[in-house]
Image (cartoon, rainbow, N blue to C red; front, top):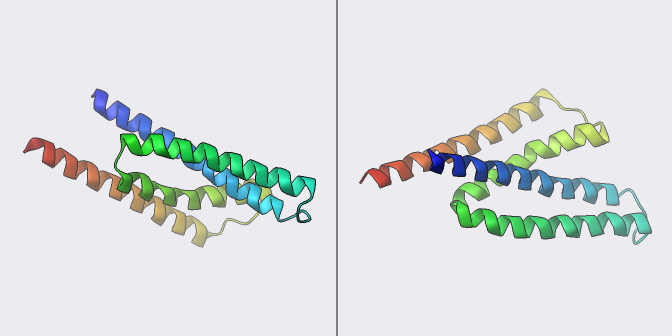
Length: 126
């Protein structure tokens, strides 16, 4: 039971890390609204660099605790976060196609994660 709690905690931490990563995309888009090398432009890209540094350190900690294939597959969830950020910050429209596409991506990540867990459980039984 404790092992499943640790796995769940690591998945939650991974998702938080991916939200942080997707915030870097928001700052990149925001920087594009300013003149090149202006103070707001540099502040936005400075924020992107800080976010990438936090992500890099967090990523290294995450892949210590779970298989790389599972952690990397979860990066696809940033598609959904990008859609949410676009709606909340830039008033971009969320269409049925975008929702369906995001659900397909998230479903694939979930299926992949469960298939790997089943394979590990079978290996442990041997």
